[in-house]
Structure formats: structure tokens, C-alpha cells
Image 1 (cartoon, rainbow, N blue to C red):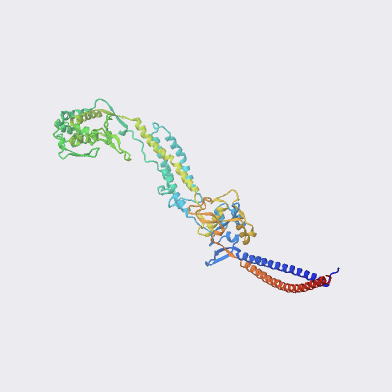
Image 2 (tube, one colour):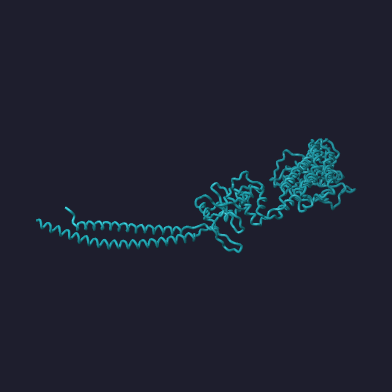
Length: 629
């Protein structure tokens, strides 16, 4: 059965409605994609707003701030108002320009390196200071910069052979070192002085510094003399058992001594003996064998107490009555003559200490003396004059000192009497050992002197070898510090030495020197890092000779001279693109809205037509069923 026209029409309308709905869906999807484009355009714009570039801030000569896009050349190149920075690669190498590399590799010293950058020269204050240290204030009189070693050569030629001869003489044994040897040594020195007469250093004593030390020491041997073989210090007493002087003492003192040993009541009697020994001179005894009534002696004991002895202790005494005062005066003169070196005998039984009582110390053959000034007192034998003064005070002040006459004083008086007789019954014998010891002491002084010549000469010549440059670079020029820091960072070890290799630095390609975008990328991706020269009071550990500065790692975004700024050109481009995109989206959206409106109108018309045609078909079907029923 064929299809009616109404049915065909209905199928056509249905197809058109379906197509209409599909087109509407496509337009709706397109509108959604427009929203994505809008979001994408907005994102691009926001990225442009957020994007920044690194800027380098500096100041011109007027103090005005200047901001420029940060490039390697801006960061690396010298300017007297800039902080010194360095670019460092991942291997720790400093990035430098080709000129820096050339200057460094063509320079053997720091001075040569700084000269490459035009740092001026000035007079070196250390030059004059060094010469003052070598020659003293008047160094210009002695220093010849064209022949700095001339005085060393002159003195060496003048003294070398003589010093060898002197050392040969001083190598002798003391027993073979004669006075002629001694005089020969001083003869050599006198010849040196004569050879210098009339030269520029005639007044060598006025020269200062290490040269002054050298020449003054060389020409000034120690003030020693060859020991005098006739001096009493080299003779010691030998007991003979019989002596005229001893007999005079025993005979003269016997009466007073015998009275004294009878008991304490006669203690004053031994004071007469001691008074006669109190530095009494034969010239003080007159023809009547008396002393003048004004005669007196004031002395001090080894413990610091004072005594006063008058003429009454001599005139009228048993000694004086017996007429033997002149004999005692002869004994007294001998004992008090320092050339006779009279000392009391050793006493192995002595138990006194520094803390003993004054009485015990006065009765002892020993005294306590701080001989070397170190605060410690040493036990030392008394001389006979000291022994006489101490015993006189002990006898006279025995009660005050708490000394018992019979048990403490009498034994001492008896020993004194016998010791005196023994000391006077002797003769002097030359002491070879003591003399040789004195000669050895003189030789040691001369050995120390001649041995000190060479070290002082070496100090002088060493100082000559270290005289600094007469002119130095002007450190007040700001370029000096900048390129000095660069020298050490590139591998300088000292002012005159460089590292053996050049792996401390690397040349940065010239094409990148002014490329701001590349530098920012290198920072952000860790290709390069930064170092800054900073003041360091204790100096640098890595570069110890660099002075009071050091190269210190620093984050590029922490550097005070570097800032971030928006890219106005990029923002303007992004904004224009964003506005164009928005306009395009808006136009397209309006078109899609119009298309949807048309589709909606068409859809409504088709739906109405569809409903009408379907109603006609439904009625025809209903009539057909009724006709055939």
C-alpha cells in the first residue's frame, strides 16, 4: 500500500526537526568552546601580567638611580659606584671576559695585572719603612739602590779571614789560650775599625736597623779583660802551722781571751779583742799605743742590726795595757783588706736556716743573702769582717738576744779564737783551676760575640732581599681593589704567584654578554650562580692574601642591586591579544545566539505543522476504521 501525501509530509517534518535539534546542539557546544577560548585568552593575559624581568640598579655620577635590564656585562664589568659581583658556573669557575683572560694570562704579578687596567703608581710608604728598619732614619747615607749588597760584600771581605782566625783561637783549651791570643782578637777588631775610617760609615755607632745591629755587634766585642794572674782572687790560703801574724794575734789577744772564758761576768773582756779587730788601722795607733778618744766604728750586722764601737773598748783594755794594740791593728788591717779574700772556715755542723733566730744567725759562720735577686735567700759563708761585727753584737746584746753566755757564747768564742789562728797561719797559692775557669768565662763571652756575627749578618741580608718596590699601585684608586679581588678569584695565590692551572675561570661568550633573557634563564635554571665581594674583618680563608675582603656566594634574588620588574611590552601585546580574542568571541557568541533563535523559531513552526499533519492523519485513520467496521 502506497504512502499518502500526509504521511510523507510528516516524515519530512520529523527529519527537519531532528536536524534542527542537532544543529542547535552543535551551536550550543560551540558556545561552550567560546568560554574555553575566553578562559585561555584570560590566562595568557594574566601570565603576561605576572611575568617579570631582572633589572640592574646603579647610579650615575650625579647620584641618580638608573635601572637597566640585567645582563652579564652590567654585572661583571667595573664601575667605581658598583658592588663587585661575579657569575659562577656549575663547576665553580668564574665567568670572565676575553680581555680579563688575556690580561690575567699575560701578567706574572698582581702589579702587572692591575697596570693592564690603568691603575696609577705612587710612592710606596713600605719602601722607606723597610730601609729605616735596615739602616735607621738616615738610610739614604748608606743605601745604594743600584748596588744594595755593597756593604755586605765589603764587611764580608774585611772580616771573613779574621773571623776564621778568631774561631781558631777560641777553639783552644783554656789552659792554652794566652793573653797574646786575647790581644790578637781585639787587634783584628781594631784593624776593622781602621779600615772603615774615612768611609761613609765612619760613625758606625749612629747606624740603626738590622745593618746597625750587624756592624755594631761586629765592631763591639764584649768588654772583657784577660784575667790578671797576679790578682789575689786566684790565690788560696794553705795552712803552714806557723805564722808571724797568727802569733801576734794569739799573744795580743790571750789576756782578754783568758779573762772572757772565766765566765759571763767577764764577757766584756772579749769585746776588747773584737774591738781591736774592728777595722783598726796601724796609722790610728799613736806612739803611746793608744787610739784617739774620738775613735769610733759604726757597722751593721748581717742581720741588719747596728753597732757602735768607741775608743774606750781599746784604750785601757788588757791588750792596750800589754802594749800589743799595734799588733792587733796589723791583724785587723789584713782581715779587712778585700784583696786578701778572708773568709771564715766551712762548718759542717751548722744547722741554721733562713728562719733561725737572730742570735743563732749572728753566732753562725754563714749569712743568708738573695744573691741573684730572685727572692730566695741562699746560705753563704761570711767574711772575717762580717764574722767580727756579728760576734761583737751577739756578745754585747746577749741578754736581749736570749743567749746563754756559758753554754752558747763561750763555745763560739773558743772556735773564733782557733779559727782566727788557723786563718792567719797560712800562705797564698796560685789556683790554676780558678784561673782557667776565669779564662774560660772570657773565652765564652768572646765565643758568644763572634758566634752572633753571622746570624745578624743573615738578618741584614735577608732584610735586603725583602725590600719592597719603590713604587706601588695607588690603592686609593677604586679600580685597584676591584681588579685585585679579580686577580685572586681567577687563581692568584699572592702578589707574585699564580695557580699552576687556569681552571678557576672560564670565558663567557661575547654573544651572551648583553643577553638579559639568557642570563635570567641561567639564573632561574641553575646554570649560573652569583658571588659577591664582601668586607671580611678577619680576611678570606679561601684567598688568604686578598686582604679584608672575600668572595661570598649569594642568591641573585637577594642582591640589593638586582630587582624584578614587569615587562610592559609583553603586557601590552598580551592585552591587545586578549581584547581581540574577547571581541571575536563576543561576535561569534552573538551569531550563535541568532542562529539558535532562528532554529528555535523554525522548530516551533515545524512542531505546529507536525501536530497539524499528524492530526489530519489520525482523523483519516479513524474514518477508515469506521468505514470498514
